[in-house]
Image (cartoon, rainbow, N blue to C red; front, side):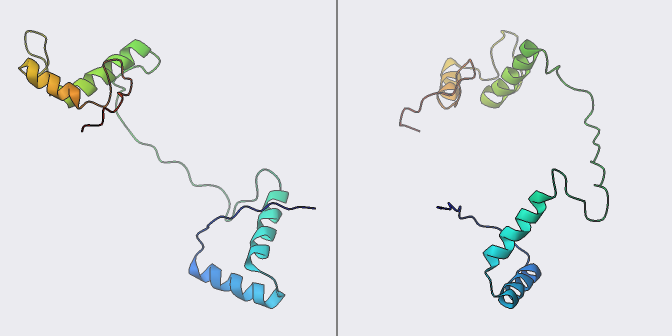
Length: 130
């Protein structure tokens, strides 16, 4: 019978690692065998193993204020995301002509050339010159 094994890295507290080494030596086995035995035992307990010390602590509650947009309204969501993207690329606000905060066509074009996304939010292909 062929057994396939997956190699992985885990982080273990120093104190637990010392105990693991000592226990492996005492039992004349490997640390891997003890770790696997512990995992097998937990998995055999069922879906929810008993919690150490009782119940889980309550989740934190944050007051984030009123939502800026109804995320169920896709058009409204895209409008907000587009506006935020445009503010990052072209500067905040629009002037009376309705164009972005960058005054010249050259400035807007230069900003668009470095934008990672096109007007539809799709990622632009890299041209090789950054």
